[in-house]
Length: 506
Ligand code: SF4
Image (cartoon, rainbow, N blue to C red; front, top):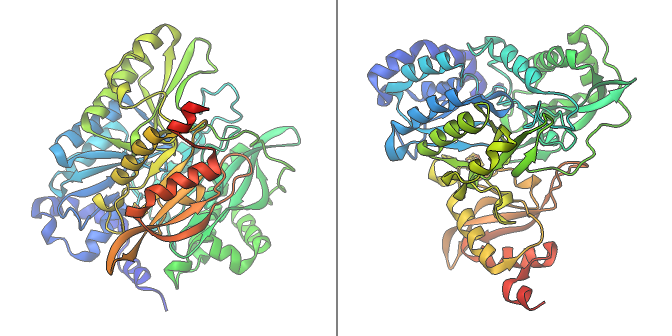
């Protein structure tokens, strides 16, 4: 028997909700029934019980790239909601806007269309924002420019942003990443399908990984499909895998519906054969080795591009939080100093590319850089956080403010010689990806002095970049109020941190 979500989706395709947006806008959110509130996620609109009437709007930004003009459109929307309006950079190189009123949605979508933006199919059982190398086209050591490939895959899946019923009812959500550089800057291992650069017979293409995902019940790193494709076959292969997953993926139990569960059931060989049948030609076996041979970069700071005389500057955005003025400032800075382009990273930071050498000095005087530093501290630099209880219905704990406060205090108290990646996530859905961190915190509840309190499970050992693998839970149910000294001790014991007084004496 199908689970209730399957019945709900079969009753009416989520994309049909597009036709009702004008009516919802004129009648207000209180008149929208629960099923249709869910269906709004197919348009990227998320009802938040914590802020009723104030929706979250998740965009699609292929390869995490947008123009200053697009950024200004988003800035104006966020600004129109006063203190309710914020934007968050996500761990999928994407932006989520908060504070959105349903009354404004038709006009917002008209503005999106004019600006070449879309939020379609960004929630529920759809393919999420497709990630690509944040340095595509500007990295001197780049192997494959991922921008066009990511764009084509998004356009196929979404019918050029209009919505595509062929892929609007997958068994579960689905993540695709295309890596083009040598440092696995997209976290290939945590995607349902990932393309990793690899040479075969002297041709540069991609080895394929499949089945990576996080969920409340299981986290799995992607496994090699033992397949290699020419870049020209990325699009048809994505389409073939999605058709196979759509038509054969498990739908009985939502906890066991991601692609890896189908691979478990069939085995990799059968999965590959079914994909080949759909594709219409056999896949080449994987290249013996891939080209991910660097440690992961975080892109913060000033770096020369492959284009002589130009630079990209990575700005650290604390926990990815942007306000309207920040969005306007970033758009202006991209225009004044760069080429009008802004890029986002999976570490929730911003890159402004194409800044000439001659403009760097003035750029670095910009007031915004006092908050969005090019030289953040060793702990702040690697801090990532999901939304948490401020805005998310699922959250078991507050994440962003707590994570920021703890890191600010520890940076005063400790001396570190290298960046440490600390990730916070508010519930087992793991949007903050604690499993890829050096130290990850996953929100839960615990009891302390007879009271239920916010707590975390602690993960350690996540490795990114070359030879990436997932970290494991090392401690459970630590009350958040007791966490700081434990984190301090972990940093001292495992990451060479020294208490500042001691550090001064050595
Ligand atoms: Fe919300 Fe949980 Fe995802 Fe955090 S991990 S954004 S709390 S669903």
